[in-house]
Image (cartoon, rainbow, N blue to C red; front, side, top):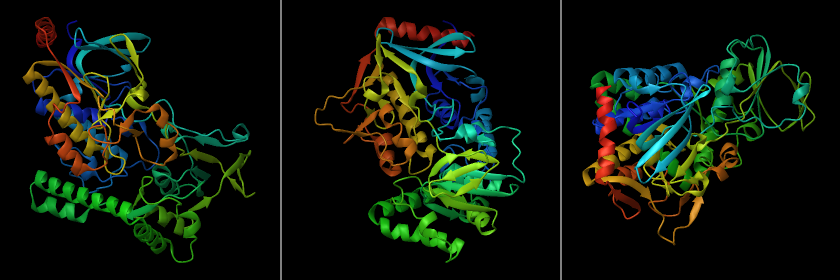
Length: 501
């Protein structure tokens, strides 16, 4: 058992997993931990995706960690810069020494008798096992195996190159070629202006429009504050400024959607001119923030359209042909390269199997507790960000709460903490209130949330600060079980063995 038992096992070495490890170091310095990463490199999303122009769709003052200031000039950063930030964080704090690469976690089994998780991983053709007292899932929200591509008719007839952004070929040459990007989300609006720099023409083909907002890629106030104030103070002030403005904007989207819709469309009209068909190509049928808004730094998408290097077509696909795509309207778009920026396959909790005392637990049958734990799953939490703000804002709060829970359990002599649904008046709701297709396709596989606290999932940073940072750990919903002397002695041995190793 030496070297294979930890107080905490973190699954995933992406933005969330590295952040979770640092929070453990800061707030639970006595805890041993390991990070199990299924791929051969850290970075998660920012290492996996290699498509042209990849960038954040959130500012780095809130996507960055609370404990490590973002010091670059660009607030809307490119993928390589974000990956470097994650790697630098892991190196600075020695977190990289705790990562076990190519450990694809497939199953976790909980024993109440031992107050312990047994975590099974595939390492190549072999299986490896570690044990831990607490399991912290930081594996993101989508499948790394492949992205989502609809079953397009006639796809086998197409004589050109078909690419999904999640598996971008390293040697793909699209210079001088006709490119069609299918989609209208964050990936599509990133690809179109970047590919149009060298392609002969890029067409963004969408079934329906998305709200698109242009903003500078640099935050002038943030850059000024960094010049006159210490880095941490400047970062904190910028972070709160961004958070509060974001919360205000989201609230306005909910309380005055028509006003915000008019504001957003006026920005597009100003960028593309009064003669452009905004109604067809940039006016969604839904209200702002019913789906995630798309950010285009410095209006690069609009600039590529105005230059004639790119265009937008709003129509439905009838069939692929040998030379392109035929639309329902009868028109045909010629293409040498087609990029299916058609979304992700959502997958919560790493698509793992969970077993509690010999009984399989289906994640979809559980209820989400405080946005991070799950009914009847002991000593387990997951890091899942906001849909209406930066991912890391929620992850930081989740990590703080997990550390507070672990310290409370140590203080009280508890071995097990399990959310239990005892209130019969609790109704259930979908986990995410989002109309995007990639969400709606997978909601039946996800846990549900309750209609009131502590089972209600808030998309509000200020409210979550109160609920997660200051609320009582023992709230009548978490069920605790104390350590026995036998369990306590078992728990001490691996830690000692680790120290000797």
